[in-house]
Image 1 (cartoon, helix red, strand yellow):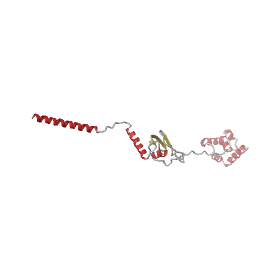
Image 2: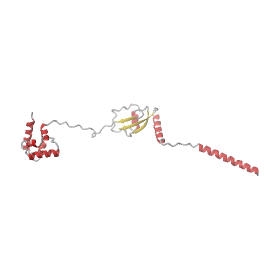
Image 3: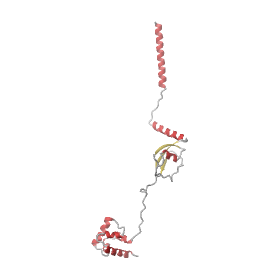
Image 4: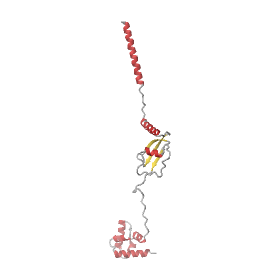
Length: 204
């Protein structure tokens, strides 16, 4: 009887030991992945580097900032032996208004390289050229004469002189001599007299 108990005790101990060994091996086989706040970024960079290697680029990794006329501007991880044209392709390609005429597409990339793709200005965005106007001495007199000077013109008294000054103040300078006819009290006859007077005064 005692022999049977001892035998059973040994069997139980052996089973416990075997279970312990199995449990240890099972848990030690599970890999432990360390958490890191930069894990996601490292994975993205690794994918970008892998993609570069698959395209035959095996240079050192560089960060390139792509701006301007590209579909998806941003910072990209590239290979140092890649070119500007590769960076543009990585950013989704050129936009419809991109202008590469002044851009060196064959330039090798460097770390912290900033690639700015110029864009063409729209018709509205182009600076308008100022109009060049020739000097008109009669218009100059109409736009610069004061009350007393205007009253010296033929057919003009204080009331009409005041009307001319009021028109100028309200509408700005006269752009043509014919605008003088829009002033209250200035008719065709008075207009002709004033123009002949000013042309005579401004003649050399």
